Length: 142
Image (cartoon, rainbow, N blue to C red; front, side, top):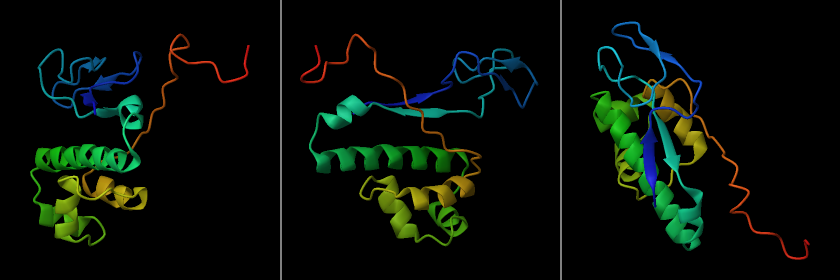
């Protein structure tokens, strides 16, 4: 499965560097002036690769991707699993460990307290249309 961390999802999106106050388009994830890491990241999980596998394998791949994202965000904030678990609505540390290892699929209702505990202001799901040239015609249509 392909999971990518992207600095931007729109061509017209701008962000201001917290270090030097330069307003810019976040192309590389780093400030164009001072090269400081910009605080904005998106995760891209390709649907096609998930749909090509069996349902249980899909769940496992999603769980592993989400676990990887959670671990990365926690480590970037220099938090221990115990600290994050306590901040996230008294979540059990061992459950958080299973999440990070991809052994458990995180329900959305548990994602929001974790996101808040990690200091995130939004969780965005972005849906991209398929390339019209790649879509197949449905049976019975012309």
